[in-house]
Every structure is written in structure tokens, then in C-alpha cells.
Amino acid sequence: MTERASPATATLLEVLVDGFEKNEVIRGFHLRTLPLADEPAAVHKFEAFVAEATAWKGAPRREERSGPRRVVSWADLELRQAGRGLMVRVRVSRFQDWWNAADTWAGDPMGPLFDWLEQERRSGR
Image (cartoon, rainbow, N blue to C red; front, side, top):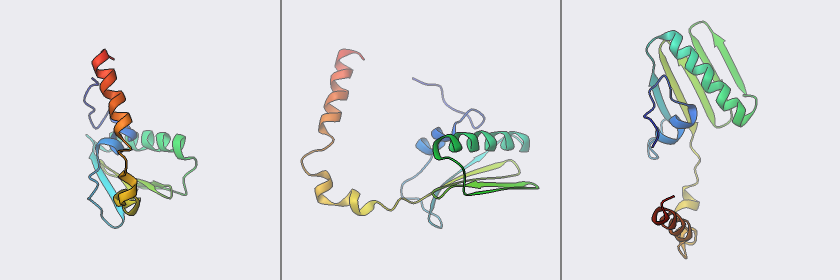
């Protein structure tokens, strides 16, 4: 079991995995807000998220750091910071046609994976 992340210790990956509601779309993006204790903490976390995203996605398409506002974005990910607030926006994937297609789920495609997890659980792994 891992420790619960706080806004100060959360990684971008943790925000992306734990933070989004699949049906929550605003202007074509899923988004999550992360209020920090103060503006320096928000700037520090923003820069950490930018470094993490750059390691995964390469150079961003857009970078603006002017005055109290910062935005760095890729084709499908945008990070914004203003004041003590941080926002992570992820462009909607729009794969619901594939996800909801009958043949996607035909033949229990996930069964072998769940069986494997159950075997590991029983063996104490």
C-alpha cells in the first residue's frame, strides 16, 4: 500500500490516474484542479509537472511563462498555473465508439488478466 499523496507530493501521473471523471468534459478536455498552499508552491509543482510531462511526451508545442500565469501544452495535455492554483487538462480521447463496440468485448478479452491477478492473490504475491 502506498501513502496518500498530498497536493505538494502528488506526481502528474497520480493526478492523471486518480483525478479524472471519465464523463466530466469541459470544452473538449477532462480537467483537474490542484490548489497549493501558496504561489511559490504552485510554481514549483507546475515546473515538476512540466518536467514529468516532457520526459514522457517530448518538447511541448506551447510554452508561455509571463507574469503570474504559466501554460505549457502538448497536443493532448495542457498544464496551467496562476496564483496558487494548478490545472491539468487532458484532451478527450473520443474512443467511445471502439470502447462500446460489441466485438471489443466479445469472448471475454479481460478474463485471462483477471485470472492471472487472482492466481497471484492466492499465491500471496
